[in-house]
Length: 217
Image 1: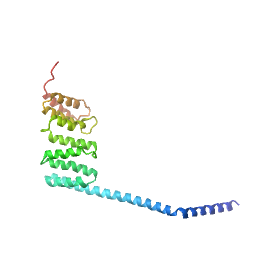
Image 2: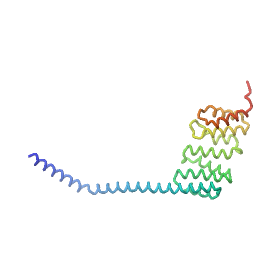
Image 3: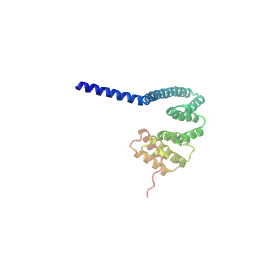
């Protein structure tokens, strides 16, 4: 008797499945097609992005080789092209390298390119700070201390990636401006940061020795 009931239950289940399939088969098939299309699209996107990255990497290496061969005009053109067309990582590196090539012939124009990078909200903070520092390095001998302070102070914050270099540049700029108080301020900041590199600490100590003694009250 139990076998008969089992057969009936099985028949009922088959009939229910048949009805469900007849009602929803189009939706099931469409859903399966969408899943397959989505997976295929994602795989295609990954392949396309990997291909673009590989092409950009090869083009970047070729531009860097031009620079190493002192073909700076050609390297500048190549890096500028990559800065406009490459995926983000290579685009950002290319913007920095293009500015470096421009610096070979026109430091002021190169500083402007670095300024554009540091002001770009789509650029990550460490890369903005690097651009600030490179621009400041080009302008150290000509810019006023107040201009350098405006440029570099955001990069001197504790934890900032390039804070050590930014602080040293500000100390040097203040020293050039004969501002002993500002020079001491930045040298103290350098000295009090336990993560200051040893070589930079030595340079800061050498600069400290050039300052006039602090007047006693």
